[in-house]
Amino acid sequence: MERASFMPIRFRCPHCQRKLKARSDKAAQRMNCPNCGQPLTVPAGDAVEQLPAAGPADQGAEPDPFAELIVYDDEIIYETEERASGPAAFSTTIARRQLVGVSRQLIYAHAILLAILTLGGLVAGYLIGRTDRHPSATFGPPVPQRVLISGRLQWIGTTGALADRGAVVIALPHDLEPPEKLPGEGLGPDKPVPLQGDARVRAIEDWGGDYTRTNEAGEFELFLLPGRYHVLSVSHQSERSWNVEPDREDLAAIGKFFTAPHEIMGPHRYDWTIAEFAEGGQFEHVFNLGRLE
Image (tube, rainbow, N blue to C red; front, side, top):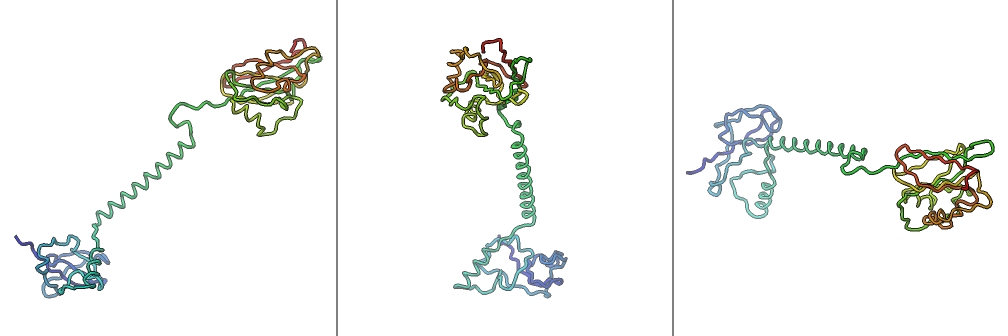
């Protein structure tokens, strides 16, 4: 069975005067101009100029599904009576291959899809940003945080308990096996307070401990992970009796962390003890003249 052959109808839009082409089976139908959008009627009969029907070589070709109403310019040729050859035919073939018909529904679908993808990207970026600002929202076990440990050191003088200002407090994790010893020189209460970023203080913090000095009221603060610690407190206001030396076991234990531990204590009274710290913990010690410290 032979396919129906539709002769193209060429005419101008009565509104915008743009050249249009429609299949002959659309004659007398109401349509909209693809250029200006105004309604028009495809002319029929002798009122239009009709191009010749497709030749024998085109008898088996499928009808163009996008040729119901097409805007075309003078330099674009859809059909000609003569078969061009040579460079002209080659350029015409290229021009035809560059013409791609797309339905309005497909364009709308692509626009909707692009909008959905854009909105999805914005939502994903917002959620990722919220997660970055709130580390607690991430998955996995919570990371332990250091807590504030407050304390106070006093010494007993002739007038009673006094604030031990300028005293040294060093906290070291109980189960710590230090990779190396730190120099003890310069960490005692008689020495200036170490500058911010001091290598020894930074190393103590990296071990999980802390180093601090008491203020004028004998108060101090430590920032530690909850757990068990060795605490070395060295008084600044009171000294040992002239015939009292540091305990040998204490020197050996402190010597695991510092070279020349006696340089930290000097002639001052000290306390080397073990303490358990939790959130909101406190530490206090009184250097008593009646004790052999």
